[in-house]
Image (cartoon, rainbow, N blue to C red; front, side, top):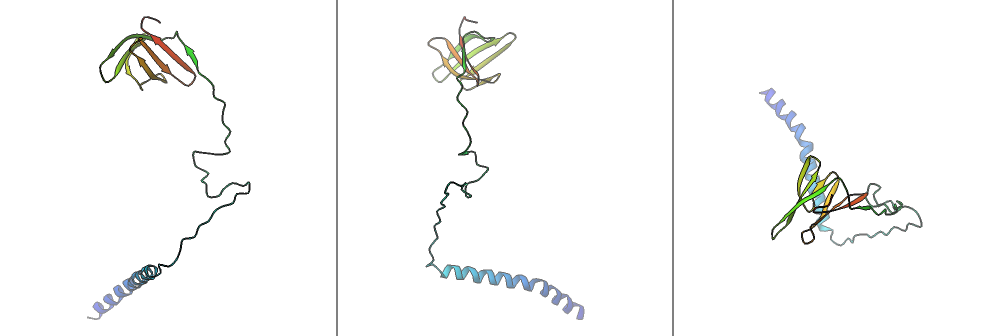
Length: 143
């Protein structure tokens, strides 16, 4: 019988501080709910030529980062690619492009060797591949 009382008192000692913490946190929540007359503070930082500490250093936009001059890509009419054919319906157009032994069937937005198919002109039979350094214009029958 004594060991049961000892176990009960040991368990009570373990959980009593937890009950006190829960009771105190509930009391603090009630105090915050009762105080509704507080107003939020507003702070405006005056930089005076210094960096704003509230702007993240890890953000993608950096104000002080120098911009590189824009380099216009070269437009090539002759390339290793050949426009073999165009196929289209009411919704979209597809192009068949050949490079030596490789053949691709592409639509607008597809990528071939780091070049994006940016435009397929079915009226004139042209296709435009756009890359960082060059723009390739392909026409049916021209290499």
